[in-house]
Amino acid sequence: MGFFSNWKKNRLSQGENTKEKSLAAEQSTDWQNRLKAELAKATPQLSVWLSHILNGIEQKGDELWQRIAFLLHNLGVDENESQKFIDTFSAWLNEMDYELVDEFRSELQYHLALTLELEDEEDERDRLFLKLSEGIGKTREQLSLRIDRLLSFNNRFDDEFWDEFEEILIMADVGYTAAQELRKRLSEKIRKQKLPDSENFKELLKQELTTIFPKQPEASKQKPEIVLVVGVNGAGKTTTIAKLAHREVLLGKKVLLAAGDTFRAAAIEQLQIWSKRIGAGFYAKTHGCDPAAVAFEAFDLAEKDGYDIVFIDTAGRMQTKVGLMEELGKVVRVIQKKNSQAPHRTLLVLDATTGQNALSQTELFSKVAPVSEIVLTKLDGTAKGGVVVGIALQYDIPISFIGLGEQMDDLRPFSGADFAAALLD
Ligand SMILES: Nc1nc2c(ncn2[C@@H]2O[C@H](COP(=O)(O)OP(=O)(O)OP(=O)(O)O)[C@@H](O)[C@H]2O)c(=O)[nH]1
Ligand SMILES: [Mg+2]
Image (cartoon, rainbow, N blue to C red; front, side, top):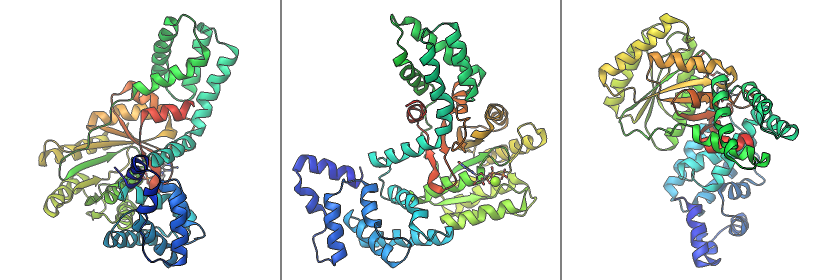
């Protein structure tokens, strides 16, 4: 349990004094005294405390580092750990070319939440939900507002209603098969109600959506854990690797990135730049070499050097190009030669803006690689986010992460219940 949860629990059980006590009582300068008083009064939440800490600071520099050191101190972090956090974060800001607090405020909170294990805090979950809700705004418009409109002029739940409902789902890219399935499930539920209530209809749909998402995979205990990342051109594979690897680094893992996209010369360099930015190891061979060899050798290196997790990038390929799909099949077989359980995870990265094509990608990639998870990128700003539902209903593959933008903290763990709520509330 994180600091803030403990804080709240203690305060509830021991009364208000605890909060004053938890703040270090020692000699302080004026700004420290002022901040200390502010924090003691503020709601104990990372976002709230951070807003006090960052108040009046516009860019990175000594003043910012002093403030962060002060925050960490008051969160009970010891001095070495605190310095380590600041050094790592400051190096990262340099790598990313961030100067202004406004550019990296959200990323700072993300780094703090992961490093201090505050990710499960209510506050962090609220922030996540807000991001999700903003990200899928267009899909919500496509789906939720149209359902409202439908209910306002037809609440008879007759065939006409269900036809219209199905069409709304299809327009939001839920897909024909999934739309029919949802129609069937919901109309059965409504039929069982004595007095069908249009007020409750969206709640019923929300409940139904919540149940259709396959369970998240359990965290792997393999070391090294081999994660193969596949998908069509431009889906977001390399950026997803960078974001996931960044998460793992912040969680304290030793991470290796393997440049299995040997097709484009620039792809190797792109991954190398990311590895440097996030502080991960990097393995590559030459442009044009066999990607299966890169995967095999990176696996070797990871065993030898004690890496916890290896992300293998691959070249983008259209699911319909047979030769390229066979090449991917070979990568999988070669990895399996080293260890029959590997790859321990195979992530299929799908671009949400491609809508229904994502279904065909899922179908065909699953034939050559043991796809165990789906990462759905670019859900921000698309009206086609309903494809999440189609994938869940047609394939029994969990969606583990969704991409809501280009920043590192824009890749979020997926929760079906949150998704349904953000879509319909
Ligand atoms: N808006 C938005 N953009 C994203 C997201 N994920 C990735 N991108 C952008 O999509 C573009 C392509 O991303 P890459 O990671 O290079 O895609 P790739 O699948 O590795 O592409 P290839 O290697 O060419 O097959 C980049 O400009 C990313 O910044 C997301 O969740 N939202
Ligand atoms: Mg790439």
